[in-house]
Each structure stands twice: as structure tokens, then as C-alpha cells.
Image 1 (spheres, rainbow, N blue to C red):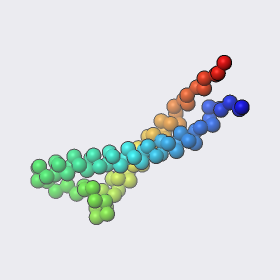
Image 2 (image 1 turned 180 degrees about the vertical axis):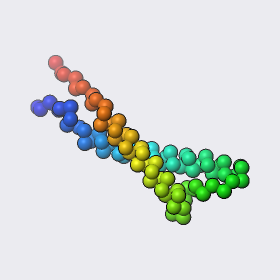
Image 3 (image 1 turned 90 degrees about the horizontal axis):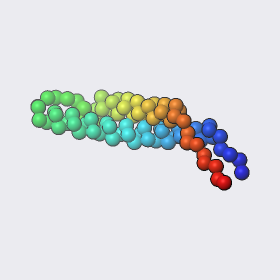
Length: 90
């Protein structure tokens, strides 16, 4: 059986990093929206950030930027990190 090389699973690791970046980006955006919504209600300010991205272009842009940041971050980490070593069976 062929031994896997160090670069044989790079595409899979990058794909996993992209998926993880999308999920983490969504959760971070909703967390920021929730915190700013509570701050907006308690202080009476007029912040335009809401979780309804269909009605608010600022929220949609912020969501896209946060997701893109996390995709790039996780892809960079997956690209730069060393894949695990294979144990040899005796």
C-alpha cells in the first residue's frame, strides 16, 4: 500500500478550514449582533446593526467580512500547520 505523503491531504485540510471559517464566522457575527442589540436596548442608542441581514446592508456587509476573515484565518492555519505524522505498524 502506498504511504500517504505530507501534501496528500492538503486539499481536504483547506476544505475543512473553509467550512470551519463559515460556521465560526456566522456564530461570531450573531454574537456581535446580540451584544450590540443588548447594548442598543439598554443605552437607547441607535445602532444600525441587527441580525436581520435582508433589511440592513451594513449587517450583510459585516457578516460577509467576518466570514471572509475567519475563512482566511483558518485556511492560513491549515496551510501553515504541519500535518500529523503516520505511525508505522510493525
